[in-house]
Structures are given as C-alpha cells and as structure tokens.
Image (cartoon, rainbow, N blue to C red; front, side, top):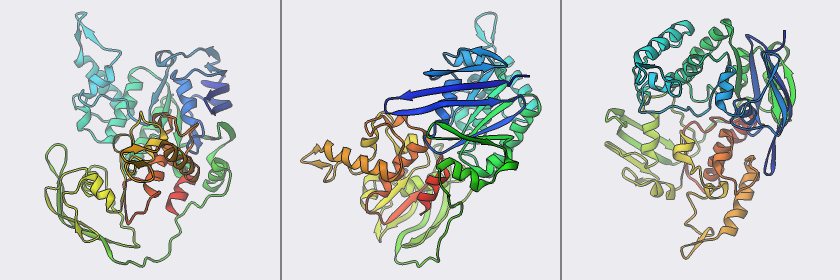
Length: 443
C-alpha cells in the first residue's frame, strides 16, 4: 500500500538562499510524522509547497500513489490536505461558525447563509474529535488554545485527512498542549495522518511515530522516538552538541532596578487584569512571572514597557518614576523589551531586516545625524548583528515578513540585546526558537 503522502526531490530556492534541497519525505496513513529543524531549516517552506502557497523548482508530490499538481491551497484542500499555520488565519470579529464556513459557505434558499447548518456540523466534529468549542462565540473573545481548535475544525470541516500542524504548541500552556495531544491522537485513531512541525524535543518524543530532521534545507536523518534521544536530535538539528539545561550560578542581587507598587491595569475590554501587584527586581537577578495565558501577564508587561496605561499604582525604574512614561522614555532609561507578539508589537513586517534592527535607536548617533539616517552604518551594523545572532536571511535588505517565525524572533532579540541595558523585560523570549538559539539566549 503506497504512503498517503510522498514528497520526492523537492527543491525550492529564493534569491540568496536554497530553502529546500532535494527533500524526500513520506507520510503513512494514521501516522504522526514530526518534522524537526532549527530556524530557517526549510520546514515551513516545504509545507507551504505542499499546501500550494509556493511552487517547487524541482520535485514531485504524490497522494495515495498518484502524482498531483498543487498550485494553490484550494488544490491542496481538494486532495484532502489542510494546514494550521503558525500564526492563525482567523477573522477576529467573526464567530467560530462564520470563520469555519468562510469560503465553503452553507446557504439556504440559494442566497442566505445557513449558520445553523454550519453550527450543527461544527458541534458534530467537536464531539467526534474532542474539540470543544462554541460555534456562536466570537474569535476575539476566545483564548489562544480554543482559537487553535477552531483552526483544526476548519480543516476537518473541509474533510481534510492529511493535516499539517506548523508549530502548534508555540503559544499554548502545558495544559493546552496536553489537550492538543489528545485531539491529535483522536484524529489519528480515526484515520487521519499528521505532519507535526516543531522545535520542542520533549513533544517530539511524546507525540511522534517517526521523526525527520532538516538542516540547511536538507534531510539529515529519519528516526523514531524509540531509536533516539533528545540530545541526539538536538545534535542532528544544529550540527553540534547542545546543552539542553540552563546552567546558572547563585544570584548576587545589587541595587533595585525596577520597583512596582500596587499596580492595577485594565485589559482591552475594560476589566481589571492586574490587581494590586507589587514586586522589585534588583541588578543581577532574574524574576520569573508564571501563569496560564490570560491571567494578566500580557497587560503587566505592556504597562511596564509603556504600551498600556496604568490605572493605579506606581512604577519606578532606577529610582525614577516611570508610571506614565512613553515607550521611548522607557527604552531611553536602559530598558529592553522582547514583546509577546513579535509581529504586532516587535516588528514592522514590511520593513527590511536592517531597519527592524534599529527601530529603537534609528534617531541616535551613529545611525542618524542632523535628522538624516546614515544608511551605510545601519547596513553595516545589521550585517554584524545578523551574523552574531545567527539570523537566517538572504540579505539584511530582505523584508522581515519573509523570515521564518523563529528568525523574526532572533531579529527582535538581536536588536534589544545589542545596546547597553539595565533591565530586560522579556515575554516568551524563546518562543519559536530552536534548541541552539534557546541555548544562546539563555547564556
């Protein structure tokens, strides 16, 4: 019996980079096949080819033994292939049912949307695969874990039986990851096949039946969890041994750098998200803030970075009041900020990598003089930072939107870590990064 899916000799080049270099990959029916690799290894490019978003330069795709041409996502969907992207493709102001039926609308009397029929089918799918979700809920009001369920339901609604999950756990809590794994196992038990793209070694060892590792656009090996270890997988990914634990000595706290007293902050809906929070951060120490997504961490970080108004309480940075400071004023006091949402708050996606690397210092010397940007120094500095932080990009003039999610995160980290700072406010700083990059950032 032929594989449910087979890729043969897939090659894809972009200006200055060979993203996929003669890649072979098979997926069996009822299998979870993990695709592992460092940032920029070519995983997402390969899946975008399979989903019809890119056209390969060479190679072929077969589905159940028959060669197919996939020119766009509608071709992929027609052949039973569906993809949940790393950054969700949902319309926030529409309901779950409206998002799910978008493009394949149910109608009655030839002209009216049949929302009731769509809701019925969604409830049926939810019950069948353990994907609990309210069809009438508005997307913007749902936690990120539930939004991901909606994306999976979209594929099942279209009767996809080959599912591509691109970094599906990147924004999930541990509890949500467990729920996702239950859903994936349920789908596989009912005949679906899954390609699971991730950086997270523990998850691969837990969920995968087979593992294929990419490095620099090539397949470097295929194995199974029983035949390998996390350390061996990490070495295959980056080409060297990787320290998978954080080594740190005892802290020697110094002066108080950040002082928060009785802080209260509202969320976007006018509800109190941060209630009377007080703490101090001293030089030479790391203060961790833990909690399930949606319990005020986002609003706390935004308030400290000057991105959200403080309702009550006080914030001091190096002894100076910063309660009502603007983002620029906060940054100029020696604060670096790695935001939770890199695309919304950390980058200007249409700008090149070089410009994104100086978003917080472009107006200062040596990048500007007498109100004029010094493009030569900006480009030279960008080249150095790209090399130092291993940002995989064809050029520093490439729009940052063209980079993988992990490399976009590296651009932010490179920008924030490459100037004198006294305080780092980092929300999920290693989100979307491979083990080698995580090791570097922890150091």
